[in-house]
Length: 310
Image (cartoon, rainbow, N blue to C red):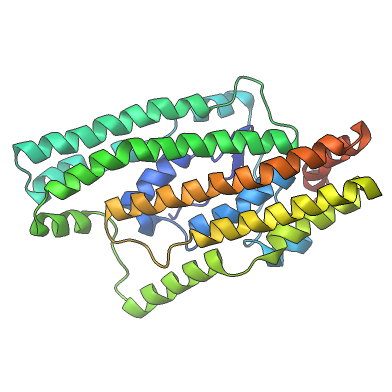
């Protein structure tokens, strides 16, 4: 069964981030085509719509529409965030040891990879929201998302040096054996090439809807005054720039080695953080210019979409 991206689970943004990143590093074939490409779409959906996702009429500009998930309980949210997933610890260490043929020094380096992976998982828990602390406003959601992305990036930066040290200690023969333990490439090379091309297209192709369609919806619901129009335009420009930042980080293909995939993930996570920081000032300024009534309308756009099915 191939993984599906889960952007929000209650107040938790990207609840499976730790497992997703490190499982992807070892088993990228276990993820749907365009998995992390659509994570970009879900990033903007999360800021503007919350858990609701984009309106159906906008689906042509986003990822294929997904059925809404049942609202999780508070206990389930807390448990999920406290257990970030297996990640590095799911890697087949015994198989790596036996099939790659490690010497004593290499075994120690591999053990260090597992140790720092566990350390990263522990630190990753700090990105969990406090009890009953649900981000109800677009600026609040963006802040929560940024904290979560930063924690994920720090986890990658914790594990990657140990992973690279282990991989560098291997001979060329051992590296090939190690690479073979991970993802199993499709037997049909033509099919693999087509999948790679589709992934790249979904990630890097122009997506004007990610920037202008949310702005259109906000304008319709919030009804900004003439004095607020400039702030909305600045938000639109910042969102368009953020889309460009993330598209620039799209890899042309999936790296063959686990260290290469971790490096790619680090770049993409940094791009998502840079995108968040690009949107943040404009979003805060526009939101701050709104009246209490307008803020309430803005805050409820996603919830109303979810309730109405529109």
